Image (cartoon, rainbow, N blue to C red; front, side, top):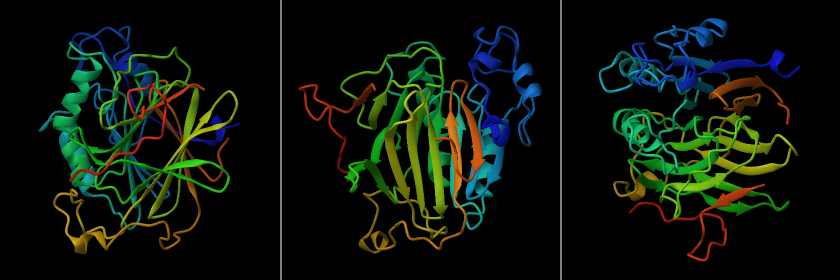
Length: 327
């Protein structure tokens, strides 16, 4: 019943695309020779996606959703990079105020796997170098990925520098929400626990931008009721329990580019974010579950522990992550 009422938007990963001599950027054999054909023909994506250029964008409610392929050339000047630049530049924020990007391999990943060109760390560095400037320039609010079989929540970050750490706030029911108030950089998530065995290769101490690592099977629910308030909630698929919640607010002055804290003036801080908004209407919900980095978008209500957050000191005790913004 859930799958039949949901719009599935997917991005290809190494197990769909990678093969020597194919159009894939990486030359591994993880696709078993499928070379993206099965994934893209059985489940075609919106324009301009094709088998060998499987990137796309689509609007649902208040969201402009972008699916990039981390398995195809995304370096500056490549067809995918040029398309991504054009797509993000053309977003009408008055119609779709929230911009979400999805790719299979993570731009930010707390992982010890480095060395080869297709390793977590090497791909992270290349995505930061080649793609992240576009995300910052065009104010992409949230980016999420799969590949690594873990759940991770990162700060609002640019070039591995924390622009704004989330601030944990406790509500009257005892639920902690990690707040980002008008962050001037993209917040990143890893959503890789759709069902495969966990990849336990995170490092400690955490990188400055890594706020949470969790190993639980489950899914994320992203919702927005207006142009200034977005909520991310993570649920256990076993118990249905809410295990993590994060909120992003944003300023609705779309002509104002993001400004790093060190460049901001007292006047710019008065523009602010906030959750009031103009009340654009119905709630729009995105349900995320990445075994192969898939995005299922639903309108209206959606079906609704092991957890590690940054240690507060060297004691190994878990605490909610806080960090001063970049100054």
